Amino acid sequence: MASKVRPSPAATGFALEILALLVEIIGSDSKLREWFDQLTARSAVERRNAIYALSEKMKSTGKEPDAIVAFRLMADPRVFSAARLALCHR
Image 1 (cartoon, rainbow, N blue to C red):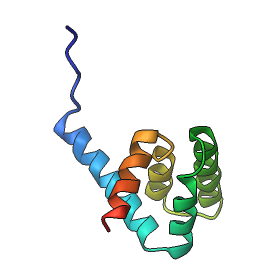
Image 2 (image 1 turned 135 degrees about the vertical axis):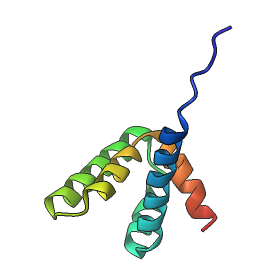
Image 3 (image 1 turned 135 degrees about the horizontal axis):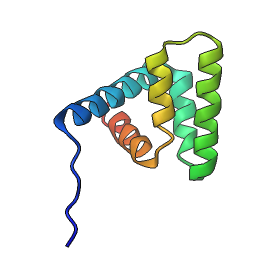
């Protein structure tokens, strides 16, 4: 039986910080929240493409690098689901 690799507490803490940043950014902007909510109806590939497109737009307009990284991580379905869940409870 294979054992599961568990992330270190530092990695888990960083992941939670990124998730918190995502929720803060999305939850504080009504247009961004509407955009995010529309992503739930898209396929994983369409969602990933939309997320990457927005992160490139953010980069070209000089947005904070940490915010760009957070948005790119949201292309991972697990991160997207966690952000969606956190936003539902906000």
